[in-house]
Length: 148
Length: 296
Image (cartoon, rainbow over all chains, first blue to last red; front, side):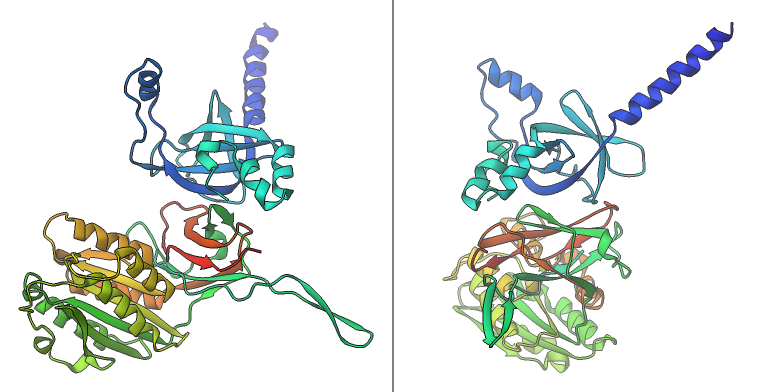
């Protein structure tokens, strides 16, 4: 009987620990506005041979987030999906998205992960000569190619 | 937030070592520094007077700058205003009241230590200075002279002309503002729209536009973009001239200056913007960028 009572408590505690562990912290070091990616529906249309949706005509924010081990290039899905540029940003990963609290409402904004590289590779690119930096910074060549 | 990018790059040169006195080695170093002037408003368009350095970050050519060399309230002692008036027959008759109201509001507002108001009209082939520096007592009826010269409107040339006129004072304690009353259409300029914007940005002139169009037009869109690019604001005729004058004065009274090292991202045009670090309801407005003459 005692075990039955303790089991839900144990499960709840483990869940809390797992959630806490999945939360990570990083720092946003770059930002730019770039063409919004076509919707998933547009992607499917393109893959099935339909008309290519080249651009939505809107500009969406794109960020480079540096963490201890990994550097992410992420993008918002709409033009007004902006992130506060604090020194440290808490986030968690879910599938191919980065979930970030942008205000105190508790609501998380979903950002697409466009590319990622290891922190070591990123650090090497930062110390590379300027001519090499453009390539090294291009986590996603389409998204970041004009940075340098 | 209205942010004016006041200036510029101070010096750029590599570190040097020299021996000016025997036995004493002197290290010389120069750094590139950017100085930005900006102002901020909240979600209700109210000016923020108690901003701190931790409330914002600068995005300079994609790179985020949070470590500033200095951050202070801007201390302007002088307001240089030029009103650029479209005197074409399709526009001028609608501007009489707005111009009179604007002149009164700016001239009679206390708290501006020293102000200078000029009025430039454009019609025909050339812009024309109606009065310079001393327009506060001029009868607006004398300023509006409807053109009969075939509707020629050299708007872009006139913007460059006004930028040059405002820059002549060369007073670093002066805030330069240009108020444009127009429909945004140009028919005869030698300069392009891009060149006009460059001249205004280079001379640190903020543009406040009053669009006389009653509906969305290409000219109206240009005026909005012009205001954004220079760190000014855009208004419609329905808003009234009082709102334009209020915006000019509010930005004069509540602006900040921040300086930081130029991020190592090469020569050329650096697009800048200011973004909040915590409160996304803060709105910052500033000049769209600066030109770094050489890479480091």
